[in-house]
Length: 348
Image 1 (cartoon, rainbow, N blue to C red):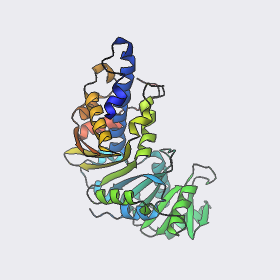
Image 2: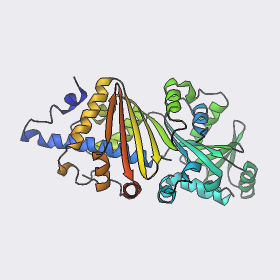
Image 3: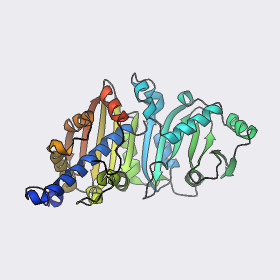
Image 4: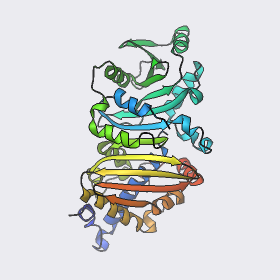
């Protein structure tokens, strides 16, 4: 039985009694697409080496990785419009510290890969790999002269941002003059354990190696999100803090991974490939998107016009168990999306 029929049979064509349930379902699906587009368009942004290096450096339990070629994006005319959205607040704070120590991230960092590990993901708990041109001795002297915390682990100096005693404090280290790693202390130690052959690397995952190979070198911004990680990200948006009539995890239960890339030009093109467990699931998602587009205005009244336009113009293709979505928007519309206020739990 198609996935759409399985989830929608109770919501469509059953009369006034089931109207509220149908509306809840449509709203949930719509928010899932809000997540898919806004999250992936805003995710941290052609010779590329850091992607392959991250496979060898990240732990095997990594569920998500996001690559950005900052050197390429700085040359894009639209860069001043998107610069403020490329880095999270945590990375901005780390950037401030590095500037104080004499590092200029705008010039010294060329490539950046972020990762998230484990099943229960916190979007603020990331680790990463940065490649560029660094001066480790200068950073060491800055920390030593200012009596700031330096820990030694696995043969590397770990520099703390903050006191270093809080669970959420960030640390970073230099592998050499062209490579740095960072993250919370336990995550950074996990990266160093991989580097010292104490733990298996993400490169041991055949699927991740294949997905990275499909994306590497074709876009300055791309990412891989496993089905479980995608579900973890989507569920808060789907439920909006309320109990709905559809189990949100079921919507993503058949998803093996989501791959995305963003191309910059006169238009911003976002390509999303949803790899499902089987062709039935891929066709089911395609039907869900068709239902989403036909949702009455009342279901989408709180969605920005720019995002509504993007969703309506989605190019959807199904190839076996893979669903491909291509979204296009102008720079001005993208700026509206990135600057739009975030939804709060319970907001309809």
